Amino acid sequence: MRRLIPILSRVLILLLATTGSAFAQNDPEWTEPFPPFRIAGNLYYVGSKGLASYLVTTPQGNILINSDLEANVPLLRASIEKLGFKFKDTKVLLISHAHWDHDAGSAKIKELTGASYMVMDADVPVVESGGKADFQYGNRAEFLYPPAKVDRVLHDGDEVKLGGAVLVAHLTPGHTKGCTTWTIKVAEGGKTYNVVIVGSPNVNPGYKLVHNSSYPQIAQDYQRMFDVLKSLPCDIFLGAHGGYFGLEEKYAHGEEARRRPKAAPTSGADKAGDANPFLDPDGYKKFVAEKEQEFLTELAKQTLAAK
Ligand SMILES: [Zn+2]
Image 1 (cartoon, rainbow, N blue to C red):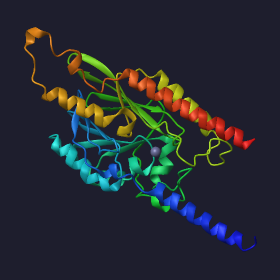
Image 2: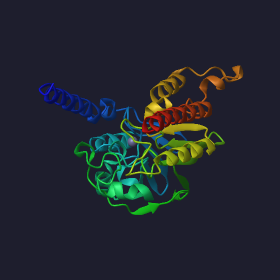
Image 3: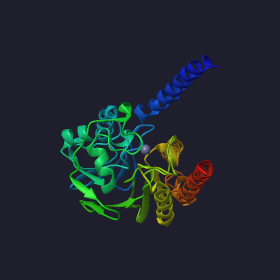
C-alpha cells in the first residue's frame, strides 16, 4: 500500500495536468475567420467563428466591442476593412468581460488605433493587470496577456455615446466581477430594434459558487445577472460567443434569403421568409432560462457537497 500511494499520486498529477492543459487549449474556432457582415442598421459582425466582435459605425468614428485574443487583431482589422471601414476610425473599445478570449488584444488595438478603452469598474483591475487580478485564472500563466490601460471606468447603467450611437453598459456579474451586457437600439427599415449583447452567463469548470474566498458574493452576482438579463427587452439577440445565439445558422439563413431571387412585388413577398434571422426574442428568452437552470443546478450540487 505504501508503494501504491506515490504511484497513485503520480497518476493523479498526470490526470490533472492533462485535463488542465486540455482546458487551457484555446478552441481552434476562436481564430478561424468568419465573413464580416451587417447585422442591422449600423451594427456589424467583425469577429471570428468562435469569438464574437461587433462594430457600431457612426459619422464620428466607430465603436468596437471585444478585442479577442492577440492573434485575432489582424483578423478584426481585415474584417473591418473588408466592410469598407477604416481600422483607424475605431474611437472606442469595449469588452464583454475581462477574460483573455475577449480582451487580450486590447493593448494592441489601443496602440494601432488610439481608441479610448472603456471597461466596467469591477473588471478594470483585471484588464490593467493583464489577467493577474482575475479571481479564478490570475495565477495561470497561459491565461495572462498584455495589460491595457483603461481610459474610462464604467459603472452599471453608464452610457457610451459616439456620433449619435448610444450603448448602455449593464453590469451582469458572476462570470467575471465586471461582466458587461451591452444594449443598443438600431434602426432598420423604418423600425427600431432593441439589441442585447450578452456578456456571459456561464459557470466555468472549476468555478466555486459556495465558500469562494476570492469572490464571496459570486452566487448572488450570478442571480443578479439573470434578473438583469430577464428584464432587458430584446429583439436582436447577440453575445460574446457566436455559440450563444447560433451565429453560423443565422448567418447562413440570412445569406440564403439574400441570394433567393426576389419574387414579383405583387406576390406580397419580402415578408416572413426574408425576416432578419437575428431577430430572435424567443431564442433570447430560451437561452437565458436554460443558462439560469444550469446555474441553479450547479449551485444546488455545490451547496449539497459543501454540507
Ligand atoms: Zn469568459
